[in-house]
Image 1 (cartoon, one colour):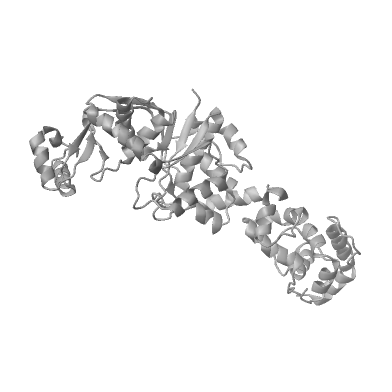
Image 2 (cartoon, rainbow, N blue to C red; image 1 turned 90 degrees about the vertical axis):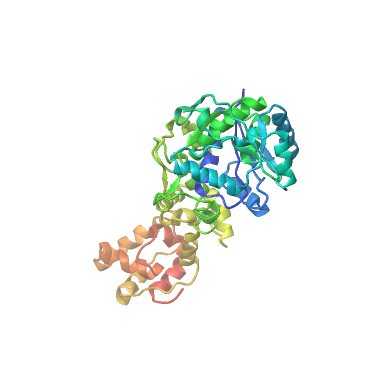
Length: 447
C-alpha cells in the first residue's frame, strides 16, 4: 500500500513554526516514500474557524513549497460523521450522557482530591429508558461518549518505540456534543480511515488520544495507521507555542523578518534530529537526507537567532535567479546578477539589498576625512570600462603614489565611496558605482 500522510490543522489561528514543523516532517516522509500528502482542514470548531486562517494555512504551505496531493475539509463531511455515529450507537459503542459541565467538574475534582485519576464513572450506562426520558423532559440534551474496551492498547511508535496503555485507565471520550456536532476524536479517525491514511505523524500531546482512537478505528472497521509522535517544539526559553497567541508565526517570519523559505525548512527539518543543521537550497536535498528514525525524544528548541544566521548563510549561496522576484518586489527590478553577487555576502535578509542599491545607484553623502589623499586617489582613477580587476589596479597605483597601505589606504576610500566603514568587497562594488560617481564622491560631493 502506498504511503499516505496528512497535515490536519484547525483554521483557528496563524500557523506557528511548531505546526509547520509537523507539516514538513509529514511532507518529507511522504516524498521520501514516494507517497502522497493530504492537506485536511479540521474546521468543525465553527466558532473559532475563520476563512482568513484557512487561506493563511494554504499561503504558508505554498510559500514553503509543501504542495499537497489531496485536499479535504471536515465541514464538507458532516453527513459522513452522522453515518458513523449512527452505526456506533446501533452497536452500543456510543451512549448518551446527561451530566452538565458543572456536574462533570465536581466529579473530576472529587476524584482528584482522592488521588484517583479523573476517569468518567460511566454513570450514564446505568440509566434506563425512564431515566433518560425524565432527564430529557427537564430540557437536558445528551452528549455521546464512546465506550472503550477495558483491554490493553499497544502500538509501536516510529519515534517513541513500544507504547502501552491499559484500557481501564482511559476515560470514555465524548465524541458528539450536546448540539449534535462531532468532536475531533471522532472526525479525525473517520477521515483517516476513509482517506486511507497509512501513517499519522503528529505531536506527542496526542499520545493519549491515539490510545483511544485506535479503539475507534477498530470499531468503525478502519485500518489502524502507523503512528509517530514527535516532541513538541518550544521557543528558545522552553515555552510552548500557540497559534492563538501568534507565537513565532510563519506569516511574521516571512513578512516582517524577511526569512527565506529554505532557511526555515532547513532548520525545522533538522531540529530534534541527529543531523547537523546546515543550509540547504532545495527541498529535494532535505528529502534525500530525511529519516524519521533520526528524530529523538528530546524537546527541540526553536531559536530565532539561529534562524537568522541560517538565513544569511542561505542568501550567500542563492543564485540571482532565485531572488530576482524578491528584488523586483522591493523595487529593484533593474538589479542584475552582478549586483546580487556583489552584495549577497553582506546580507542577512534580501531586503537589505535596498541599502546597497542606494550606495551603488543613488546619491551618497561621502565621508571625506582626508581630502588631500582622496584628491590624489581621484587623479589616479583609471578610465572605464571597469571590471573586477579595476579596484586592485587602482589601489595598487594609489599605494605606489602615496605610500599608504592597509587600513590607512582602504578605509578612507571605502568611506568616501560608500559613506560607510564596512560592506561588500569594493572590487565588486566599484564597477557598479562607476567612474563619474566615484570621482565626485572622492571630491566630497554627494553623488
